[in-house]
Amino acid sequence: MENKERKMRIGSLCVRAGYQPKNGEPVEPPIVQSTTFKYDDSDEMAMLFDLKKEGYFYTRLQNPTNDAVAAKIAALEGGVGCVLTSSGQAANFFAVFNICEAGDHIVTSNEIYGGTYNLFGVTLKKLGIDSTFVSPEASDEEIEAAFRPNTKLLFGETISNPGCAVLDIEKFARIAHKKGVPLIIDNTFATPVNCRPFEWGADIVTHSTTKYMDGMATQVGGAVIDSGNFDWMAHADKFPGLTTPDESYHGLTYVKAFGKMGYITKLVAQLMRDLGSIPSPQNCFLLNLGLQTLHLRVAQHCKNAQRVAEYLHNHPQVAWVHYCGLPDDKHYALGQKYLPNGSCGVIAFGLKGDRETAIRFMDSLKMANIATHVADARTCVLHPASHTHRQLSEEQLLEAGIAPDLIRLSVGIEDVEDILYDIQQALETATNPS
Image 1 (cartoon, rainbow, N blue to C red):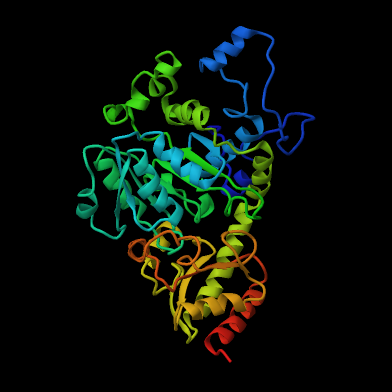
Image 2 (image 1 turned 135 degrees about the vertical axis):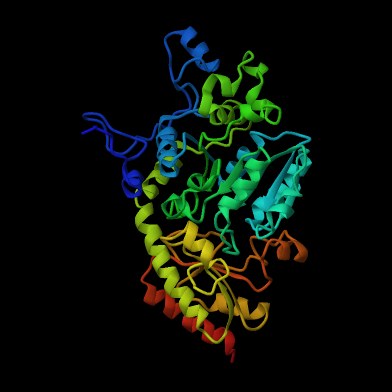
């Protein structure tokens, strides 16, 4: 019988991937809270700076604690490498800027987080990178029409924040690859526990590790993971930063020198070197603690959210609910395809009434928190049009699939009966004001 190494399942990877202690070593990755690493030989240090040798010399580029956690996330997503960043926004920026420069263009789903919408539509434009927003429900032909000769990537979110739309990843991958560009997917809400976009054709995945991966609202962070599958050299003219010599590293060509790790190596060697959006080792230690229970928490979030979504769906004062676990949700079929084990704990819904009705509902909650945060252990609620997406115009809100009455409810892992009671009493107060 052939002796093949058995691959661990996702729950075991959450606990054990990325760090294997040797005899007598700590079972948790130690916090290497040091900026700098000593060497006895100056030539060895020079080789590190020239990317001719692996090792640690400055935490802005690499750190043992950070690398252990990055390796775990790469294993969870099934990628060849991962870089941790100081926030989810930094992750999305780095993922795009690693292959784009002034004069380039990207195509992106319009159903994405408001901060990312602003990053692409406003901030990247100031850097000379144009963005075209498309409806993810548009036909292949309509989305392809948004591409230009200088388009470098297609972007989307597995589950959109805050609208809870499920992306047709295979469709987006098909379009991206037909046009010779990679598909970048923000997989924050689904997490690799419920969806691994690389298995559906995505090339690069990003995360706000601040959310479910951390799970306790203790640290802000992000991650960029590369599948290693996109053939950069086959489209060398589109991606000169990866396929032509980098004079800042003595003419090194990333894809030729590092193969499948070319994209990740360039991100560290250029962007982290120059922009420095690194997480602290302390934050990565905390993130790793959260990852160890990710598979347990995500299952409970989904179990609770399904109950809450069904309750809201049947409540006479609720106008609409978006949650792909509901059989009559327009994304139910996509949910069953890409998220058969559950989507996430986030529900979008609206109440009968006006914006003041939504505000009264939120103000009447006794256990759930009104908070900007989402996707941690505690149930929390937000009105995106007034809070996270308030920088968008009414027209932009509608383009992003965000109704003015949309309430984003992030269902936590408390006892579901307590969550339901809190929602019930708040609905009574909001819809029957005295």
